Amino acid sequence: MFRKILYPTDFSDVSKKALGFLKQFKKSGVEEICVLHVIDKKDVQFSYLYFFDENSADGNVEQKLKNEAEREIKEIEGKLKAWGFKVSSRVTFGIPIKEILSAEKKEDISIIVIGSHGKSDLEEMLLGSVSDNIIRKCNKPVLVVKR
Ligand SMILES: Nc1ncnc2c1ncn2[C@@H]1O[C@H](COP(=O)(O)OP(=O)(O)OP(=O)(O)O)[C@@H](O)[C@H]1O
Ligand SMILES: [Mg+2]
Image (cartoon, rainbow, N blue to C red; front, side, top):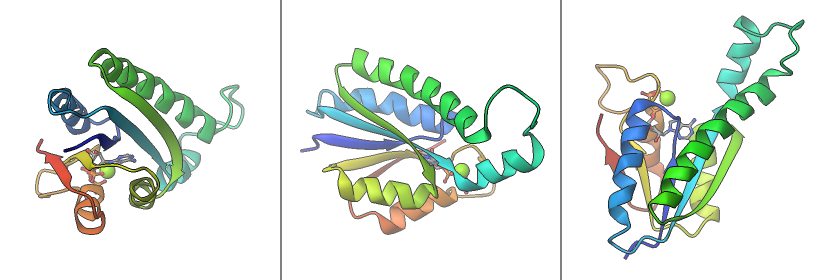
């Protein structure tokens, strides 16, 4: 029924809980997982304003965030491959919901698996803004893993 899953992740605890659920899809015939991390434009601007040290030898903020994201993605890929999935993964820059919608259109996916919340994880919010928008705007079925 489901062949390919889109798994957008912000590497938060809730998002990692969602990763744990992917394992159970193996038995139901899922072959492939597309892992997507979007480096939020807002986070890049924020890092430039508050953290970036022009004199440091670390390179620019975009490169630093990309390197960190790729490290996280490698770990996730390792797990998914060990569970027997084919994996394709991507790190992009932009607005998370826009990138996720575009991946939904480009990739021939069957279902999207997300966390109800992410990095902010505000107590009073029923859903985070990204998960809220995925549920509203994506056409494919969405599995929301609660925190
Ligand atoms: N930058 C991102 N790249 C890929 N997936 C993301 C990204 N941000 C959020 N997600 C996905 O959406 C889920 C919900 O995160 P969301 O950002 O909506 O919650 P939040 O951080 O608690 O709230 P908000 O961002 O509105 O302050 C995450 O568990 C993850 O699956
Ligand atoms: Mg968030």
